[in-house]
Figure 1 (cartoon, one colour):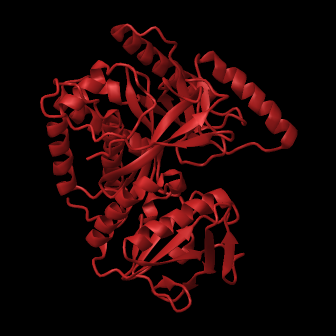
Figure 2 (cartoon, rainbow, N blue to C red; figure 1 turned 45 degrees about the horizontal axis):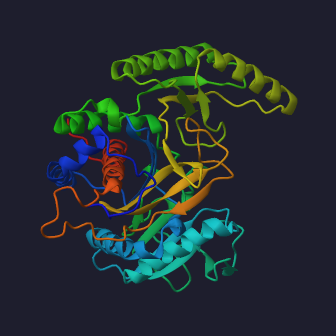
Figure 3 (cartoon, one colour; figure 1 turned 90 degrees about the vertical axis):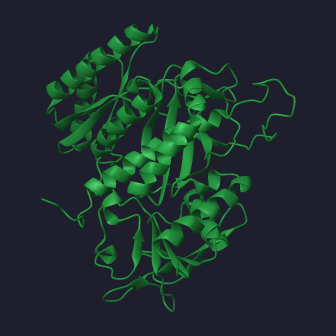
Length: 431
């Protein structure tokens, strides 16, 4: 199930939320059956946008950072989920090695690593942090602003195993999304569990695969609830071989943007929504090179391309053609401290363990919030247990609004499990 957390939305429950809350028993049974057939990602975080009329995931991370943004109150949930996850994979586990990203001096990121170490230590494991950064040649202790510290140790690779000096782990937890490529030191490990698997990294992973899986799941889930899948699914298309700076494939991108905006307009008209549709353009492979573009009119693509080409000519930094995703933009109507906000749901194994709000005071409801200047506001547990008092009127207790965020987060997690199965290089193929 989903923890009872406070959300920023305090207005009336809308039709979609009500449908989700009323269908809890059917939803939980649906998830139970899915997890009998499929393996959830080891951990994940999902960015969600709630437009009021539509509630959808816009990004799914399989190597989530930001664990330090979860409150202390949420730690017991994470510890329980960590125990369940490890028990399933390696019941006799004793030692766990965490491998962080290589920009090892970023203290905000390292506070996230320290939180992961603490969660798994509380789950009953010996936990050490092993760096694959060639610059780390001896143990390096880094003091963090919150008073904690992280000790980065150089990894030791033998023919078949990866560990540290005098430390042989049976399980290795990657907190590095491999967007710079798969390091050879992580390949061909024997009798050690590497979590998540290498094909979950951006060297192999593609957003289009995830969005395709999510689209299929939203259709099945929509049928279960008797709703239009569009209400929980951002439409998308994929534009191949585009270089905005090199002027290649601009017409292809423009036609994808135009076609998707037309589809979104049709949906808005069907539901009587008086908002201006927009799409988001981003790379398919998770590289951060281009950033995320918000586009409200297909004509903007040519203007964007001209500006990008002029900048590239000055800096001589033209980018090779890339596959781009054009994704339906979802507004957010959540506010925290007068800043535009979006909830981020954290999961480990099949469980929602908490979340926080990403808030950006200088962005609009139709813009990307995952940018410098964003702040993170922890979600708190609801103060009352929200159990109806004997003799209280029906509906007197407030519903768990966060429940629906947990449902959408878990749908994205099911999609990720399908995606990983489909891209598993070691999967058995049945003719």
